[in-house]
Image 1 (cartoon, rainbow over the protein chains, first blue to last red):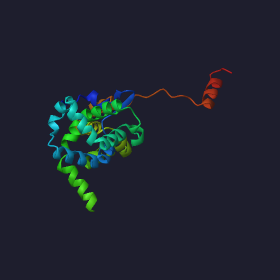
Image 2: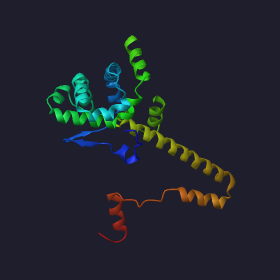
Image 3: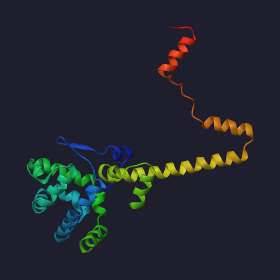
Image 4: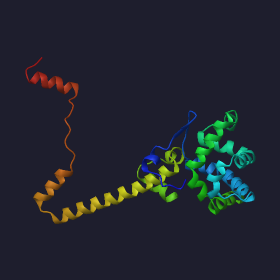
Length: 130
Length: 91
């Protein structure tokens, strides 16, 4: 997940997942998703899950299903924001399709999610309190 | 981030495009490339200034000629084309 992307990968980042093009986030999408990151990072902290362990967790079906069940609304919102659909449309999709897209989103934006730390939270707090 | 966006906009990018359409990695890639291009332009200007001050008349004219765009063949307007044909003996 931590590999340096080539120029071609950056310029042509779209990946087709079950007929839907999935691209890494734009600034607009990233800022829209900050509340989801806060929610997810709190959940990960509560469950003592480290982001570095995510690759191993993806392979652990039982653990993965428990995360998906707990984070379902966040996953639906993230997928909807990423592919430019509504949450209702994503909810109507096949479960496997949504999970496949969610995993691609996770891989494509791994660096962004990993770097989301105090900075994002501070920005959000200042927006809420101002 | 603001500095990067401002720099890209100053070089002709459009905010809406950078914010809503380009991925974050693409924006950083463009920012890096824009910086390199800007440095190269500065180098080109510095070379031109140096040549302008140091070169003699002949070398300076050669330098200007090298950098000037080649003249493109002009397309004649219909009226001028008709006049030219008449003058050259055609109908």
